[in-house]
Length: 262
Image (cartoon, rainbow, N blue to C red):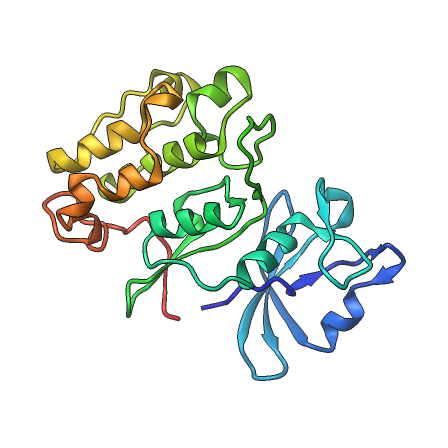
């Protein structure tokens, strides 16, 4: 797997009078372009100290909207790097997506772009890893008024009023992800469908799994479960959430998730 680390940033710009490309080039070798998007480009690379294969994200400083400072560093860095650094200091996350999100929230981070492309499954251990914190932010209890995640994973309140809270957004996105995992496609494509909040199951899915998905995709944010309530739901407790149930088998039916050998 191409691992993403907090230090793996190339910037062609000098930030705060300090060229951050120089220390980068002494630690990493940049390879071919893997892909690009609205926020930057991703290259394959190698860490020189031990040959570790990595993914290198290149961001132009004029595209960065939020900056932060790391302890002991004079120059500011993009918020994404600060969030990754904050998480790396407190250890790894759980083996399932919900536990990983609980870990993030417990350490003051909200991902804000939960979707299949940002989840990598180790095919040997079935360990789940969250990637790409480009849309992430520091966790707060008050509503957010900006969203740079994927629109088809956004909740009705964002579509209608451009406002949402961290947990309710996360849970809604989890519901979309879970539906995608068991049905092979997302439940909503258009804004009208998101606002209607009525998923139509296109495959045979257990009643427990359906009830959890419908709960996560409740129209009103206050009607959605917490992450703890998701973990205690019968579908999770009964083992289906870890791949043991009819029509709700995430391990067997996660064809939409990227699979890579770590």
